Image (cartoon, rainbow, N blue to C red; front, side):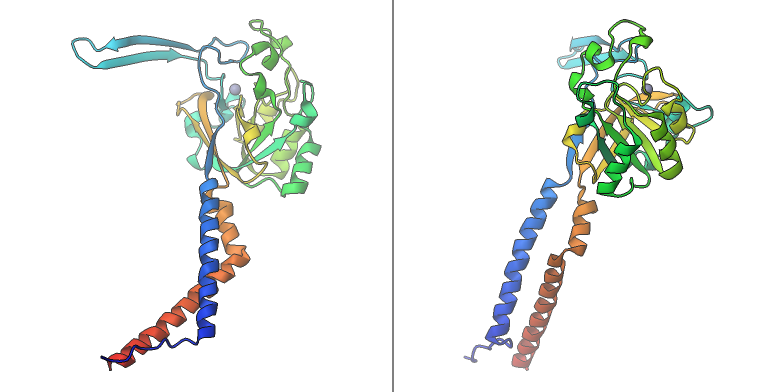
Length: 314
Ligand SMILES: [Zn+2]
């Protein structure tokens, strides 16, 4: 019986290799754990129902269930329904054509503009219960001081905290009287912010957790300033309190209505998408160097073992 071949690596080298393998296993466990936590999806949409708040001049949503029971002449369950709704109500998208002639309607907006980095400027601590406190340029500059410039081709979301009043029309809108435009009061965006954004940053959309990106009954209009530049709006956004101020990716999914100036919209955020910050961390982390060293050592060790096996065979 041939003598058992001895490993080509010295015991000290074997110990170092084992240590690296253990560190790599620990790192992989943590990294995969992070990935599982990252990529979490958050729904930024209010559910559409009979309580959904529409713009003050518009009718409420109507859902008419036209059949709900056993299908005629069949033995299975069958439901069908029809609905009617204004385009500007609930969580919805304002297409640029809403306030700018010749600009994109809902179906014209490129898909690439509907997915991108999202920045959340949180002014809820300034607003509290004051409907007359609006996003200021200082709020945006303070956000940028912490997080850097607003990402290119991104969506800026303004968190006022007003979604907590949904669907209480009086608290949310300032009035519950039909067509009482003069009575509208809620936090929004100061016009000079929109003016600064179009001159200094390259955004694809601006959203807010109140009824409008415009300060009620105030001119110049934020809608007009943004939409002249083909920047869309998102209104009545929900759950912004569940998001980080930066690092999330937003998916804006309006109903693809041709010629429409707005559409009901499902908006979803993905927090720290795996291919985003996590992979970036992998590239720059010192752990990456450990991983690289481990792989190189493993290749070196396997190579030597293979050479040993071949020599034994010869
Ligand atoms: Zn609208």
